[in-house]
Length: 130
Image (cartoon, rainbow, N blue to C red; front, side, top):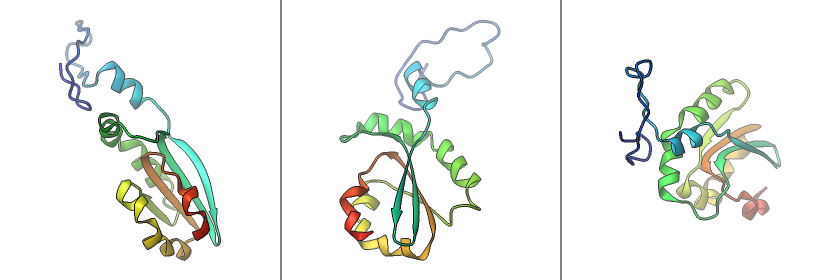
């Protein structure tokens, strides 16, 4: 079978009870899918950023990054469930992180902001903006 996340071939144990149940992820991707979101708080002048991410890696592996990207259901559920608490929810990727100084002024319009990304970005480099 082919994993729906990473696209690699894998073998699945089929029995009569699992014959019609769709196993669509390899063991590695199933393990990744069970991981919890990591969390940190970043205070700034007027409020707080709640930052959620899947893994902490300096150099991203594109295959692993795409697997986490396919599991967007966890952060989406988190964003929907927190919509009355957080005033702004942003999905951060490489482009948004590098352009942060250009759009960071938007944060000062909100008291509680949520950032979500597949991997951790180091916002401490922009600490002077806060």
